[in-house]
Image 1 (cartoon, rainbow, N blue to C red):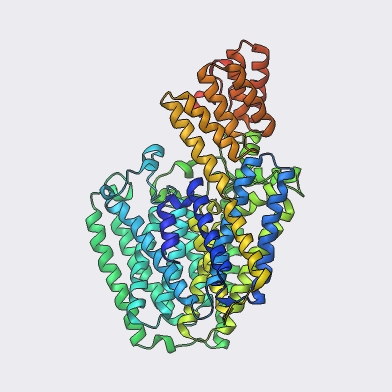
Image 2: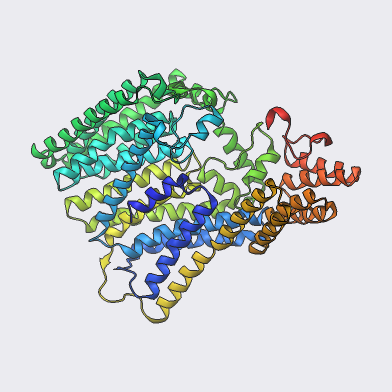
Length: 622
């Protein structure tokens, strides 16, 4: 399950689609409910180490739910609430099904699935004819590997986590075959990260390596494997750079050459993994005195580099580049992106801080950053997320939300670290180190991108920490939760799963309504919009969909009524004001139309308030 579920979810676009995400969470929670009510779960006695992360996560869910009282959008807040509930389901599933005797198998499964998917991503570039048409590459004219997530940074994050896990397993697995396969898969995962041309991906690989070295037992073996995998990946990358159609995502020519080089490189890595085990690298140890000297030397080197960077002005120039409005990095191709720190992160994060400044305690409401950004009008581009879990949480949930998120992450890390004291077997220690290395990569990467919105990536990152912390759990004998407590826990799981149902129904009905309207079936479009409205009475989108169907049918008065209701429910969404302006103009109410258009313009700096083309941004900015 640890291998197949994240792998399957990744193949569904990473679970980014709302219906897929809701369905996944529903299945997870109802499976937990069945297990609890049947007395099959939990499979271990819950350790007190898990209390604090569980409490913090419950607090984050409760605070998100409480934000319905002040949020800018009930509809968006519902989506964020169910998202967090879905992530919680993954963690609970690990805690309820694993113990110290089974967590290593789950860790191995997760690593296997992660490495397999990274290899599949590379194969999609080497043999594009065997995969679906890459609509993202065509639409955005980019050369960055995005399969199967439709987003390159999700691929980079997944590949970075895979590399860390694969390297640790290659240094600790008991069987030579497992070591060989684990290390052999690393160069392909590294090539996947390279083909995303992601600066954060490169940094994430380094973070994963540091975490792996810090937590592993067989550091000499791991160090040798890092060198071998690095050399093999370097050869594969150089070969790829010599095949422009593969490097630029313009075709499959040269893919066979790279595949042969990869096979040879992977074979060499497999040989190194077996050789280091036979040579007894695992028996080599770094003494405490040497370790202290090494840590001190590394710390001194880092400090010297920082001083030199400040003195030479490199750090200052890098910071200025990061703050620059020059978007060369966003339009650069290939490795040119790696030569600059420019981009839009500084603007996004600054905007998030400004949003927080106005609502320090409550935030603007979960899911509302898109509306804030439209009003803020810093750049001529629509944005849904702050591209940072932490900045976005600060903006949307205020200080309490960020504190709860931080407590949850810190508690999960602490629970994982404490599990180490109960592990003695080398393979178990390796499994533990691999999972916490994955978690370290995720925690850092989530701070610079919107990975929280990708359930597959988050399932790997948070699931890895949950698996590691399960190493502290003792196997249960009999039913550890009995009577009313078991029934109550089962009912909570049922409710958590049921919370996903409105999202599934509403999203499906709205899509069907749109399709019916496009085919000219306005009556069905109206009925489907009504169904969506029934599923989520708090949502504005079903009202807008119904208004559009009424508008096409010529019932403009009814359309106006629905749009006024949508605007009242979600007053900071510029779309409803823009759509209302168009309907008012069609009704001949020019003054009302101008008023609605002006409101839309206030809510979205890209909106053209002229009434010639209502409902659209300016032509060159669409």
